[in-house]
Amino acid sequence: MNHDEAIRLAKQDYRRSVLDGMGLFMIAEAWGIEPWAVTQYGGHGVLTEGYVLDQMARQIMEMYSGSDTLAAEVLYLPGVSRANDGNLGDIGQRQAGVCK
Image 1 (cartoon, rainbow, N blue to C red):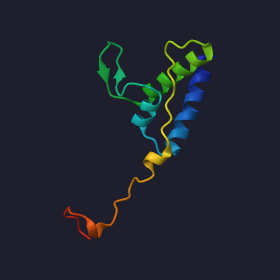
Image 2 (cartoon, helix red, strand yellow):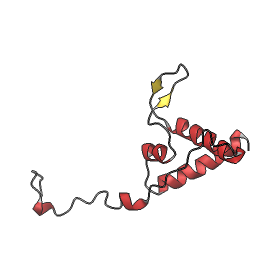
Image 3 (cartoon, helix red, strand yellow):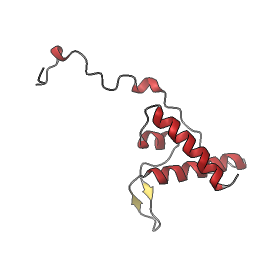
Image 4 (cartoon, helix red, strand yellow):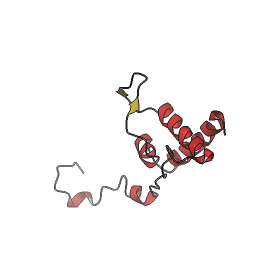
């Protein structure tokens, strides 16, 4: 498998994950990618979509080559954990000062 094919597969999985309600950091966590990007000088930088896609593609290429040195088991983060997003409960029962 070449890098272009791996990037194509990574983009497909990335799109599916976004449609499932996962953000950049959740996708990185599911793929075992550190929550920061490693810069070309060995430092740490901001996590970007391009970096996550590249790391996903590298893991896909490792999976297809049969080597298990880099490719870790991909975690499954079920949508159930995000089912209650936006549910603020009964506003009348809150202790905090929220305008009705």
